[in-house]
Length: 205
Ligand SMILES: Cc1cc2nc3c(=O)[nH]c(=O)nc-3n(C[C@H](O)[C@H](O)[C@H](O)COP(=O)(O)O)c2cc1C
Image 1 (cartoon, protein in one colour):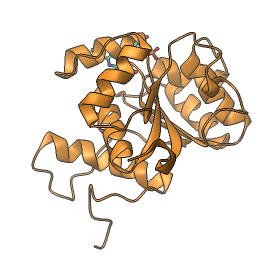
Image 2: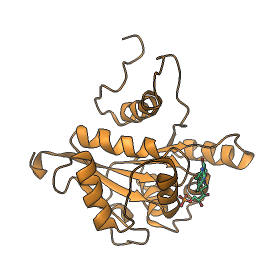
Image 3: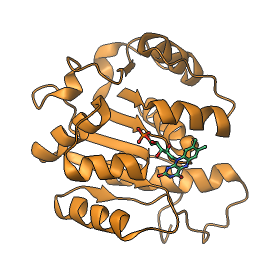
Image 4: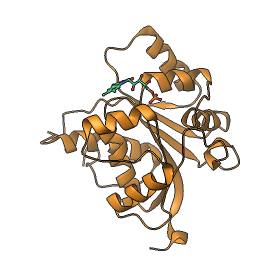
């Protein structure tokens, strides 16, 4: 597959909420759908990935891109990774950022920072750009129970046009494995992005 045949990039940010596998599976699904994927992984997310998965992901963006490329059999250049303070990265500007960004999973810390426009790291800045440019922004929070602060931030982000897609899988598809539960959420994200997939039958199929 040549680089030029790839579909437009989607930004995927993995932050330090539990459920790192949702983010990793999303990257895998986007690669399979032949999209370019621009990845950011927060420092806390690296700790969560180490705790919850067998993936050994390096922190340095170039090495991370190489590891993810090998892990998911991506084409050369299909995955690009950016560092925490890489302010010159295209995602940091309205003129360079992709038309869609997913924060998956989204910690309550990042949720709060995005809701208030903190922009203290590249993930928060990229989300701020998505909001100001009225681009697609999907946040996948995972926390329970939710405080008034969490709920207020979710409401204000929804009102700004972002989609809050909680990591709360359904059970009506009779999941037989953890992978089935993960795919339930990833399928919902792909539906939002308008990307075809075969992870899960649609309702009524
Ligand atoms: C193993 C582990 C699990 C965590 N689970 C959650 C979680 O489910 N939801 C959440 O909002 N924060 C969770 N945290 C806390 C966040 O990682 C922490 O608030 C961090 O500052 C978030 O930073 P980030 O948004 O830059 O990734 C968890 C942390 C660890 C180490």
